[in-house]
Image (cartoon, rainbow, N blue to C red; front, side, top):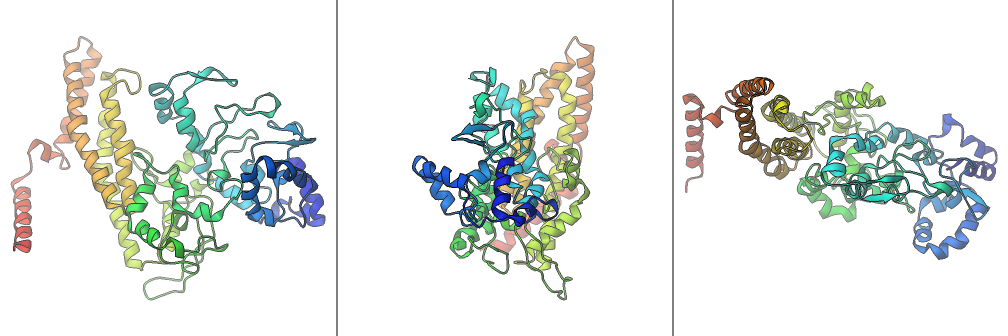
Length: 497
């Protein structure tokens, strides 16, 4: 809600309206006793010109609270994206700062989350692909006279968010609008887009609880959470019982309003009930809804080597830097315990941590070291070498799939789409490409490249002769070979017909 609209809200509520702006009690949304004159004027035209928008708003809780067009889109003269329309100052974009006028707690939690920082993709290695490798500067717009990559505009920016550029008269540059990217950088300086999950103008909680809502961004080769979810037992149960989950309930507490299946929101955002102590565990306190989806995650699996979430929060300057991973894991276990018993929950995390450790020690850490040592022997431009593509896909695509698959109990993504692909390309692509760089470097007339080749060969030998990789050189010990033979014999005996 913009500044001018806040005046309307205060006037409509009288004394209570003034209270809505008081920071100490802004954590609860407020309604209006009647529809404002400004909103009524908007409706007269927009119910004809934009019937779909009018119908969506009419079915929303905003309508029932008499919160309408002007309360959200009203602006003050001088705001970056404000423009005159039918005698009123309005703005097209409703930002998290506007929503915070009534939903302050939700906005504060969201602003503290990685979701709100999604727009930082524009400075990452991923965006080099979309802007340079895949794209060009062929998309010209008023705010980008030197051009933009249509691949970035239509791809990266639509999930992660772009910096919205305002043109004279309050119009928005077509390279940056429409855009509901989760980390959109708004003209008022706020980061994020509430409508990324709560699509305007219905702002449905039921939609936000649906896994497909999250799947708009969390899908594909590098972060296939929606595909993993649907493969998992959680996803199977959701498809079987989705009509019995009361997803339109205002309260929607797992274990009270539903228990047949979870959705993404159940595990990462939604409220949980309190639980009394049992012989196997102490009493559990209820957890409220949170709009910081990182508060129940104990590994950040985005980097080549996973890090604890407080580490990445500190790097991004987020308050979660003060919340350790153990606390976050306890938060998630509080969700799990509503459907699973304690041993089941604890043992799951043993399995998950084991996969993270395997990926780190066998592939990610040595892979990073080898790639770093290979750089002096490569063309300097990003993605100008076969090895660059190979290593990027190993950690960015395949390694993430393995880790996310384990986190969400999707065995096929953990193995066939994950660790199998990691191993296949580590041994069949990365190692031969490293060996070829060594060969080229060692025969170079450049002393620096000769030295770099020697260092890379030394490290490659160290990696391949380690316990994790000796099999590749056919150096398994006699004891290891016998153990595998004995296991094969035991298998055949057990299942022989």
